[in-house]
Structure formats: C-alpha cells, structure tokens
Amino acid sequence: MIGVAVLGSTGSIGKSTLDVLARHPDRFRAVALTANSDVDGLAGQCRAARPDYAVMADPDAAAALRARLATLGLPTQVFEGPDGLCAVCELPEVRYVMAAIVGAAGLLPALAAARAGKRVLLANKEALVMAGPLFIAAVKAGGAEVLPIDSEHNAVFQCLPARFGADLDGVGVRRILLTASGGPFRTTPLEALGSVTPAQACAHPNWSMGRKISVDSATMMNKGLEVIEAHWLFGAPADRIDVVLHPQSVVHSLVEYADGSVLAQLGNPDMRTPIAHALGWPDRLESGVASLNLAEVGRLDFEAPDHDRFPCLGLAYAALRRGGAAPAVLNAANEVAVQAFLDGRLGFMGIPRVIAEVMRRTEAAAVADLQALLAVDAAARSLAGQVIGEAR
Image 1 (cartoon, rainbow, N blue to C red):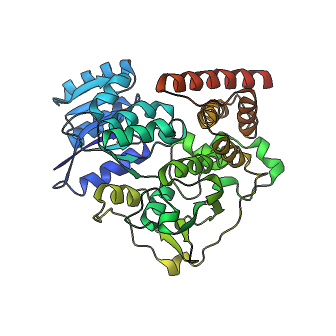
Image 2: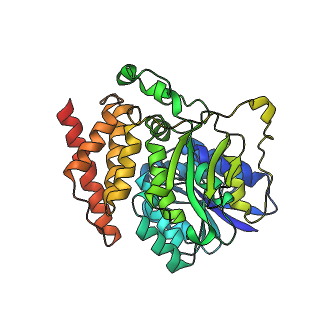
Image 3: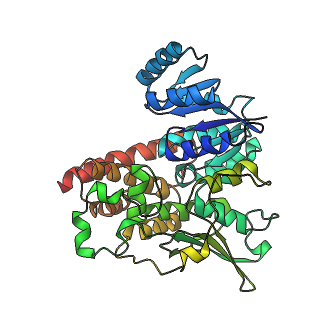
C-alpha cells in the first residue's frame, strides 16, 4: 500500500487526485490532506478518505477543523502552518507527495518532499520557477523522483524515451513544443482587453481551474511559467522550447527529434490523466477519463502565439534568459498583479505592465540559498504593490 500526501487537496488538482486514489483502494492510501482555510472542504474529505493527518495553513482554520473532526468522531490529527505542511511531507509512511498548492506557498513543502526522497508529483510550478536550482539540488540530495503533473510537462515526459536523463542531445531531441489553448481571449479584439472582468478571465473554455491559474491562462503567463519549468525538468534552453496555440486542448504537448519525427501525447482535457500517469508510472492506471473520440473532435488547429496579445509570455522568456533571481521576481510580481486584478484594483492589461516594471527595477543576481530567495520574493512583492499604487 502506497501512502500519499495530497497538498492542496481542496483545489481542483487535489480533488482530481482523490478521485483517482479512490479508484485504486488496494494500491493507494491518503495519509495526509492539506488545505489553506477551507474547513468545510477538508472536513468532508477527511470524512471520506480517513487520512491520519490533516493540515490547515491558516492557524484559525486549523482550530476550527480540530473541533469539526472531533464532532464527527474522526481521529485525524490536525497540524497547521508551513511547519505542518513540511512535516507531513517527511512522514515515513508517505511515499508519494502530490504538490498542488498554488503559488509561492507551495515551495517549502515541495522542497521538504524532495529532501525526504519522496516521489514528488509536481503540480506547483513555483518550486521550479522560483527556485529551480535549489529544488533540483534537493531532489539530487534526497534521491527523490519528480514526475510532472502539468498536462504539458507530463505529455513531454511521456514522449521522451525511458532512458532520458535531462540530456536532449543524448536522446536526439531537437526541441520541445508546449501547447496552449490561448484561454478565453485568444480572439478577443485587442482594444477590448483593457476592460475585461475577472469573471471573464476565469471562464476558461476547456479546463476547470482555480481563479489565479485561470487568470494566468488568460494572460498566458501560465505558459510562460511552464517554459521556465520545462527548462529545469528537461534541461532545455529557452531557444529549444517553443509554444504553439492549440484551442482544442487535445494535443497536450509534443517533442521533436533530430530525424524529423514529432511525438505528441493526446487525450481529453482532464487532469486525472496526468495524475494517474504519475501515480502509476511506469504502470498505467484507470483514471476515470473518457476515451478520446477523434471523429467527434473533428479538427486540430495550431497557430503561433500573438505576443502583442500575450506580453506575459515574452516576459517569462526574458526572465529565463536573464537567469538568476529573475524568474522568482517574475513570479512574485505576477502573483501580486493577478490578485490586484481579481480584487478590482488593476485592469487586465495592467498585469504585464506591473510585471515588466518590477523586472526593470530589480537586479537579478543569483541566489545562493532559500533565505536569499525568500528575501528576493518579498522585495519583489513589495515593489509590485508600490507599482500598482503608482498606477492608480
């Protein structure tokens, strides 16, 4: 029986993970579930999955969860805060950790899981975007496995040979192509983008996701972060990672080889596919995802991204090429700008302007350790708040 910790279990990835785990009760057991402040959601999951441990990032929510579980007669132990998140990642009975906490808050537990030598099912982009060198060093030091959960990176992983070891030339790979749906504004007139609302930005045409990642998809910052993530996962330089728009979201990504062959991974847009792949690898597991009906899909369209429409994509490439702390600065500024947009304090097209200004005002020296990285992150967030204030 494989023990699994699901970080961010009340989010969309977490819920899909629990769905897949429940299909294989003879193989997996949810040892620990975590959430930020959703007491009702986590209490319901504890009642269904009966984990040994639950963690609430918010201390007040943790107290409320303890009371709720006591009322339900459940023996689940409740931890709280970053220390609690890291503690469940290090439990000896936990072999796999689903790292699905959105944003910088997921960095510390992902690092803890890597240092503890777990199989890390990585759905948290920020572990690599913010701290690529530190995370990879932790993986090597702990002897951990990293299997990507983002549908794009999981697709690339499936298209690479089993003997791949982050050496593109060694296995004859010419380039990696990440597909992107283009989000809800792929064909919206450019002049209309300045007045779009959070509700419109969160209405993704193909995927059901949280609000922050939905906005990132609308700006294509999500794809930019994935470019940086692909660099660290697959040892690919920026000029060997391309992005192509594919509105049907059926081809999840492709790998081009030196002989001209292009391998693609296809499937219905359902995150249970990459989750099941990573849980079962190298085996294949039933995921609950319906079979792909290509006749029903009818057509597969591809086009180059419009960088005037999606300036965040160019900013991400620039941060990757700049190196050092630049990706961490990019990520921090984006998180602050997206939250300001969701709160109604910033227009949609203000998001890339804030990020660009924060990057312009920030030095991107290399960071030697986690504390230095967190200091860079905090400074970039503060500066982003200042830039937003100046624009109002």
